[in-house]
Amino acid sequence: MTTTSIFVARNFHDEAVVSASEAAANFPVTNTQIDGRSRAWRSLGAGTVTLSGTFTRPRVVDYFAMLRHQNHGGKIRVQLFTDAAWSTVAIGGDPMGAGGADINKIVGNSTDSAFAWGDDPYGIGEYDPLLVESPYWYRFVAPVVMRSYKITLSAHSSTFWPGAFWHIGRLWLGLSYDANKIRFGPSNGWQDNTEATRTRGGTLRTNLGNRWRVLKFDWFMLSPAQQSTLLDMLAYCQRGRGVLMSLDDGDGTRMERDGIINGKLVALNAIGRPVRIFEHSMALEET
Image 1 (cartoon, one colour):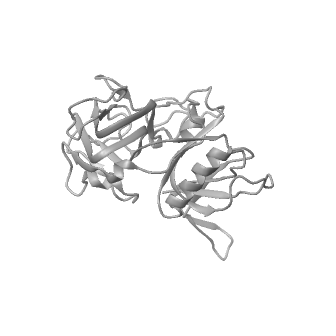
Image 2 (cartoon, rainbow, N blue to C red):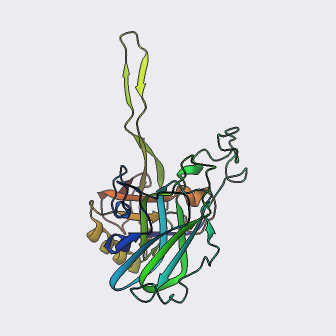
Image 3 (cartoon, rainbow, N blue to C red):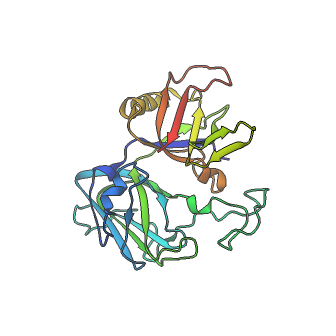
């Protein structure tokens, strides 16, 4: 367990002029710039593809995330450039190299979970039933000044998804901020819109719905400087803009994977003040 949580309050990917080497009909790459779960970018095939973005002025970034994707088993390469035309790689802007990095961040094993789910449909480890929901994330060693970027996907695998295509629902690229580890919580769980009613005979009838992560927490361990930064984040995001949060940054286990949430704040209360241990002063819901 780490002692640091991070958040990314502004997604520069949403502000970029984006393009893709290919896109299936009704699945444009601009869909990765919005929160809607029913929107996504999808390639035409399973070959190597590149997504690109460019800005009119430099941005400073150190955090990348790919969420709601179907690319497990493949490779990814993220490159940051100092110019707007993808010519000059920034210092520290190509950490994965020409071979790319494995998209599967955590497969899951007995050290991550004591509960065995049995053989899963994918024939890979029995300890992580939510592997195919795992996001891909990368935090750069240091902030990078850039004006354009490329995301290359290669070595497609059909082990986890039957479709011969690449698929991304949401992309994040921004600058992260540290916060002292959230204490006395957080409550990291699920909500869903499953319908449940009982018949006159008492049988419980259910109609399984969708689910999303919910995070409730208190931030009263912050330093004065961190309080100022968090207040700026609350003012900017309010309850309408998205924020990316990692509760256990750098932990490297299921705990880090499960603590990465792309969501919106649904409760905004004062920060930096003592609160009762079981009082939750903020809440974040996954988009």
